Length: 192
Image 1: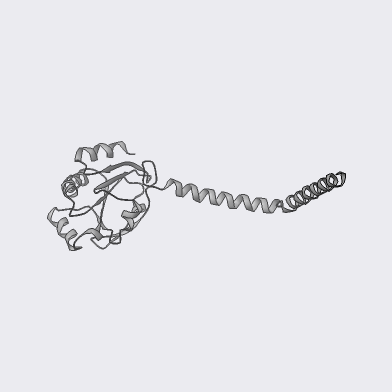
Image 2: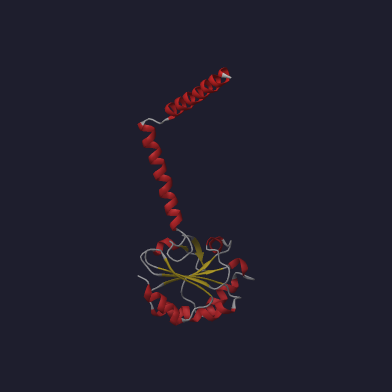
Protein backbone atom coordinates (compact mmCIF):
# COMPACT_ATOMS: atom_id res chain seq x y z
CA UNK A 1 0.00 0.00 0.00
CA UNK A 2 2.88 2.37 0.82
CA UNK A 3 4.43 1.60 -2.57
CA UNK A 4 1.22 2.60 -4.39
CA UNK A 5 0.99 5.79 -2.32
CA UNK A 6 4.58 6.80 -3.17
CA UNK A 7 4.07 5.86 -6.82
CA UNK A 8 1.02 8.16 -7.05
CA UNK A 9 2.86 11.01 -5.28
CA UNK A 10 5.94 10.69 -7.52
CA UNK A 11 3.78 10.44 -10.60
CA UNK A 12 1.89 13.59 -9.53
CA UNK A 13 5.15 15.47 -8.93
CA UNK A 14 6.43 14.37 -12.31
CA UNK A 15 3.34 15.74 -14.09
CA UNK A 16 3.37 18.99 -12.09
CA UNK A 17 7.04 19.52 -12.95
CA UNK A 18 6.48 18.64 -16.61
CA UNK A 19 3.47 20.97 -16.86
CA UNK A 20 5.31 23.85 -15.10
CA UNK A 21 8.38 23.40 -17.30
CA UNK A 22 6.21 23.52 -20.42
CA UNK A 23 4.49 26.72 -19.31
CA UNK A 24 7.75 28.45 -18.41
CA UNK A 25 9.43 27.51 -21.68
CA UNK A 26 6.33 28.37 -23.69
CA UNK A 27 6.08 31.86 -22.20
CA UNK A 28 6.84 34.46 -24.87
CA UNK A 29 9.81 36.78 -24.52
CA UNK A 30 9.26 40.54 -24.49
CA UNK A 31 9.53 40.97 -28.28
CA UNK A 32 7.01 38.14 -28.79
CA UNK A 33 4.68 39.80 -26.28
CA UNK A 34 4.98 43.16 -28.08
CA UNK A 35 4.22 41.54 -31.44
CA UNK A 36 1.22 39.69 -29.98
CA UNK A 37 -0.10 42.99 -28.57
CA UNK A 38 0.30 44.68 -31.98
CA UNK A 39 -1.49 41.81 -33.73
CA UNK A 40 -4.29 41.91 -31.17
CA UNK A 41 -4.63 45.68 -31.57
CA UNK A 42 -4.80 45.31 -35.36
CA UNK A 43 -7.47 42.62 -35.12
CA UNK A 44 -9.48 44.62 -32.58
CA UNK A 45 -9.28 47.78 -34.72
CA UNK A 46 -10.48 46.06 -37.88
CA UNK A 47 -13.22 44.24 -35.96
CA UNK A 48 -14.34 47.54 -34.42
CA UNK A 49 -14.49 49.22 -37.82
CA UNK A 50 -16.49 46.32 -39.26
CA UNK A 51 -18.77 46.29 -36.22
CA UNK A 52 -19.58 49.97 -36.77
CA UNK A 53 -20.64 49.37 -40.39
CA UNK A 54 -24.16 48.08 -40.78
CA UNK A 55 -27.71 48.82 -41.79
CA UNK A 56 -29.20 49.86 -38.46
CA UNK A 57 -29.67 53.37 -37.11
CA UNK A 58 -26.35 54.63 -35.73
CA UNK A 59 -24.26 52.35 -37.96
CA UNK A 60 -21.96 53.63 -40.68
CA UNK A 61 -23.76 52.97 -43.95
CA UNK A 62 -21.98 50.24 -45.96
CA UNK A 63 -20.09 51.72 -48.87
CA UNK A 64 -20.81 50.67 -52.44
CA UNK A 65 -20.20 51.67 -56.03
CA UNK A 66 -22.79 51.44 -58.81
CA UNK A 67 -23.25 52.86 -62.28
CA UNK A 68 -25.97 55.44 -62.85
CA UNK A 69 -28.38 55.59 -65.77
CA UNK A 70 -26.00 58.26 -67.14
CA UNK A 71 -23.24 55.61 -67.06
CA UNK A 72 -21.32 57.43 -64.31
CA UNK A 73 -19.73 55.49 -61.44
CA UNK A 74 -21.21 56.60 -58.14
CA UNK A 75 -19.72 55.68 -54.79
CA UNK A 76 -21.60 56.36 -51.54
CA UNK A 77 -18.42 57.38 -49.67
CA UNK A 78 -17.82 60.16 -52.22
CA UNK A 79 -20.69 62.02 -50.55
CA UNK A 80 -19.15 62.20 -47.06
CA UNK A 81 -19.76 65.67 -45.72
CA UNK A 82 -23.25 65.78 -47.28
CA UNK A 83 -26.64 64.51 -46.19
CA UNK A 84 -27.78 61.57 -48.31
CA UNK A 85 -31.16 59.98 -48.90
CA UNK A 86 -30.55 56.41 -50.08
CA UNK A 87 -33.69 54.89 -51.58
CA UNK A 88 -34.22 51.37 -52.95
CA UNK A 89 -37.02 51.08 -55.51
CA UNK A 90 -38.34 49.52 -58.75
CA UNK A 91 -40.62 50.80 -61.52
CA UNK A 92 -43.17 48.00 -61.02
CA UNK A 93 -43.67 48.86 -57.33
CA UNK A 94 -46.83 51.03 -56.75
CA UNK A 95 -45.60 52.68 -53.48
CA UNK A 96 -42.28 53.45 -55.20
CA UNK A 97 -44.09 55.15 -58.09
CA UNK A 98 -46.14 57.19 -55.60
CA UNK A 99 -43.01 58.27 -53.72
CA UNK A 100 -40.94 59.46 -56.71
CA UNK A 101 -42.70 62.86 -57.19
CA UNK A 102 -42.20 63.66 -53.48
CA UNK A 103 -38.52 62.69 -53.78
CA UNK A 104 -38.10 64.93 -56.84
CA UNK A 105 -39.72 67.83 -54.98
CA UNK A 106 -37.49 67.16 -51.95
CA UNK A 107 -34.40 67.04 -54.19
CA UNK A 108 -35.34 70.34 -55.85
CA UNK A 109 -35.98 72.21 -52.60
CA UNK A 110 -33.38 70.93 -50.11
CA UNK A 111 -29.62 70.52 -50.21
CA UNK A 112 -29.62 66.76 -50.12
CA UNK A 113 -28.06 64.08 -52.24
CA UNK A 114 -30.59 61.49 -53.37
CA UNK A 115 -29.26 58.16 -54.55
CA UNK A 116 -32.14 56.07 -55.87
CA UNK A 117 -30.94 52.48 -56.20
CA UNK A 118 -33.07 50.67 -58.74
CA UNK A 119 -33.43 46.91 -58.23
CA UNK A 120 -32.65 46.45 -61.91
CA UNK A 121 -32.56 42.67 -61.78
CA UNK A 122 -36.27 42.69 -60.89
CA UNK A 123 -37.25 44.90 -63.84
CA UNK A 124 -38.75 43.40 -67.02
CA UNK A 125 -36.32 45.50 -69.08
CA UNK A 126 -33.53 47.89 -68.17
CA UNK A 127 -35.10 50.42 -70.56
CA UNK A 128 -38.17 50.57 -68.25
CA UNK A 129 -36.05 52.49 -65.73
CA UNK A 130 -35.04 55.18 -68.21
CA UNK A 131 -38.59 55.44 -69.57
CA UNK A 132 -39.91 55.87 -66.02
CA UNK A 133 -37.34 58.57 -65.22
CA UNK A 134 -38.16 60.48 -68.38
CA UNK A 135 -41.92 60.24 -67.82
CA UNK A 136 -41.65 61.51 -64.22
CA UNK A 137 -38.87 64.05 -64.97
CA UNK A 138 -36.49 62.51 -62.43
CA UNK A 139 -33.26 64.54 -62.17
CA UNK A 140 -31.60 62.95 -59.13
CA UNK A 141 -29.13 60.07 -59.72
CA UNK A 142 -30.68 56.67 -60.34
CA UNK A 143 -28.22 53.84 -59.80
CA UNK A 144 -28.58 50.43 -61.40
CA UNK A 145 -28.15 47.49 -59.03
CA UNK A 146 -28.06 44.94 -61.85
CA UNK A 147 -26.52 42.08 -59.84
CA UNK A 148 -28.43 42.90 -56.60
CA UNK A 149 -25.09 43.35 -54.80
CA UNK A 150 -26.08 46.53 -52.98
CA UNK A 151 -29.65 45.49 -52.19
CA UNK A 152 -28.25 42.25 -50.73
CA UNK A 153 -25.64 44.18 -48.72
CA UNK A 154 -28.42 46.35 -47.27
CA UNK A 155 -30.72 43.31 -46.86
CA UNK A 156 -33.56 44.99 -48.73
CA UNK A 157 -36.84 43.12 -48.32
CA UNK A 158 -39.79 45.45 -48.84
CA UNK A 159 -39.49 48.30 -51.27
CA UNK A 160 -39.31 51.15 -51.16
CA UNK A 161 -36.79 51.21 -48.33
CA UNK A 162 -35.13 54.52 -47.47
CA UNK A 163 -32.07 55.39 -45.40
CA UNK A 164 -31.26 58.93 -44.28
CA UNK A 165 -27.49 59.19 -43.87
CA UNK A 166 -25.86 62.14 -42.13
CA UNK A 167 -22.75 64.02 -43.25
CA UNK A 168 -20.49 61.60 -41.32
CA UNK A 169 -21.94 58.60 -43.15
CA UNK A 170 -24.08 57.41 -40.21
CA UNK A 171 -27.58 56.07 -40.71
CA UNK A 172 -29.98 58.37 -38.83
CA UNK A 173 -33.33 57.09 -40.10
CA UNK A 174 -34.70 54.04 -41.89
CA UNK A 175 -38.16 53.68 -43.44
CA UNK A 176 -40.00 50.77 -44.99
CA UNK A 177 -42.64 51.90 -47.47
CA UNK A 178 -43.24 55.19 -49.24
CA UNK A 179 -42.38 58.42 -47.46
CA UNK A 180 -44.26 61.68 -47.86
CA UNK A 181 -42.51 64.94 -48.66
CA UNK A 182 -43.21 66.12 -45.10
CA UNK A 183 -41.56 63.02 -43.61
CA UNK A 184 -38.51 63.52 -45.82
CA UNK A 185 -38.14 67.15 -44.72
CA UNK A 186 -38.67 66.26 -41.07
CA UNK A 187 -35.95 63.59 -41.08
CA UNK A 188 -33.64 65.82 -43.13
CA UNK A 189 -33.89 68.61 -40.57
CA UNK A 190 -33.02 66.24 -37.70
CA UNK A 191 -29.68 65.29 -39.30
CA UNK A 192 -26.42 67.16 -38.91
